[in-house]
Amino acid sequence: MPVFVVGGAVRDALMGQSVNDRDWVVVGSTPEAMGAQGFLPVGKDFPVFLHPKSREEYALARTERKTARGYKGFAVQADPGVTLEEDLARRDLTVNAMAVPEALAHTLPSAWAGQIVDPYGGQADLNRKVLRHVTHAFAEDPVRILRVARFAARFSEFSVADETMVLMRQMVEDGEVDHLVSERVWQELAKGLMSEKPSRLFEVLRECGALKALLPELDRLWGVPQRPEYHPEVDTGVHMMLVMDMAAQLNMPLSVRVACLMHDLGKGTTPGDVLPRHIGHEGRSVKLLQTVCERLRVPTDCKELAEVVAREHGNIHRSAEFNAEAVMRLLERCDAIRQPERFERVLQACECDGRGRLGFEEAAYPQAERLLKAQQAALSVETAPIAQAAAARGLKGPQIGAQIAMARVQAVAASL
Image 1: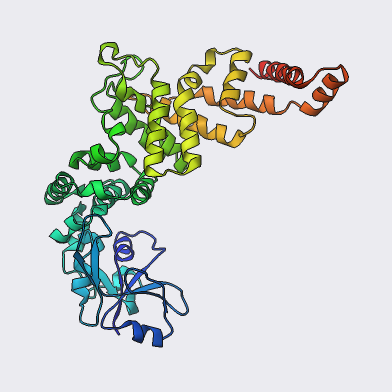
Image 2: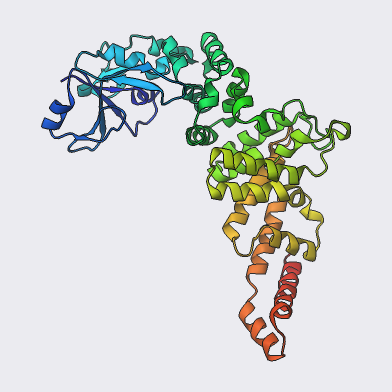
């Protein structure tokens, strides 16, 4: 029963990166034979088993045949006659279509000389830093377009092979992308957003035409001008990519990166006769991102943070001019008293926006420090004694709330 470690574990080891998860392929076996050795079947669509000790997943070598549109439209064949080369042929990219015998899986790549099964040139493409599809069967699974874009973002020095880009464009033209399910799109986008260079994700999707199909709200931002005195890069799409890469540079969490991605969507719907100004784009951005989040089933925490950032980022940028009353109103609109940790995320997204401009990459963002001090001052107000004193004076409900609000404004004023 030959067993091989395959895919990303081999790729990452050859690139000198740490390997956390391994995918195993078993050649020449059957489900019955696997069960007899203590493996536990867990696969629904194809035979996958858990190792009785390590609990890692072992899959029988298999082939796939396209039967319908979308990424689920496949018939799977897994039998003892399927070879390792046939199993590797169904994989997306050559750099992911290599295998190493089980006995060498936990050794250093220096011990793999002559033992790497590489029928499709994965090592050569690793050396060339090229993402290339294995066979034309790549075109049968539209998720692979997203995976290529994600790998381009993760390995930002890699380029997409010309023939692979041509194939991806054809897949888009054939309507394959239209059959992707929302959950899978979001899964791949989220991974790409958390990569070292998220802009590459969107560059690749845009180049092959998939961005227009999947995120038209974002795709339409390219070519939309902004006022050069505020945005030297001018183009809104370019600005968005600068913001995304700044979020990655500052190691921001996923929710902040989603907020960065969606904060300016409304600029794509600004009437042409008012450009390059974008009056009211904040409200339009909120409506558009709500549609996107519903369509892609984006997690609630990401959606709610994005709404606050889209609505208030302009005010936060201008907040250095605000007096205590205006700052307190801003804090209340951002729900900064009830959700202090989320407000920190809001400010992080705004910093990425402020620094995601041509020539502003190293600029300070003092608004964040000022607003965090104001928030802490407001939070330091002990509300219970104020409420008790107000109640003792016969005040009720809104009147007590007004007393607390006044105390918070005074505290904020002292912090500014």
